[in-house]
Amino acid sequence: TTRVVKLDPTNPFDVCKAEVVARKQIHELITFLKENSGQVLCLIKPQFEAGKQALNKHGVVKDKKEHIKVLKDMVSFVEAQGYYVKHLQPSSIVGRDGNHEYVMHVVSQPCHNVFHYEKLVNEANSYVRR
Image (cartoon, rainbow, N blue to C red):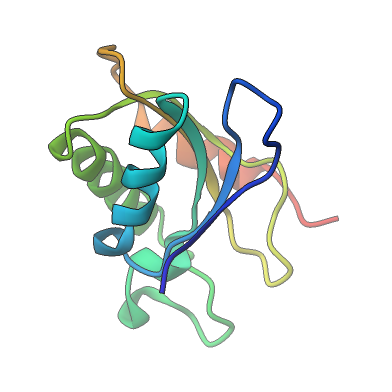
């Protein structure tokens, strides 16, 4: 299931936590976007998007090509819903098992950005678990 939680109801910029098991479950996030400020930050977790075949025995996606595919798929999916990705960057926080995740800023106002996926993934891989 998808769960979207608004973290700060007083902030005009909606920051929410979106737990998305598959991109097709992002509809609640899109509804949230429509009903609020028209922009939202979400966390992309490649370990949930890539599928079991892409995970190592610890549940971590190690293949950079899989990370790139997940990022491209998520951006394409958001755009297919009529929204735009304003920013996309790796999270500096590495998961407990070593998963690298990404922060995506989705907006309703048109913006056309070109993302350098390989550079983003290489940057994510430069972060180490603390």
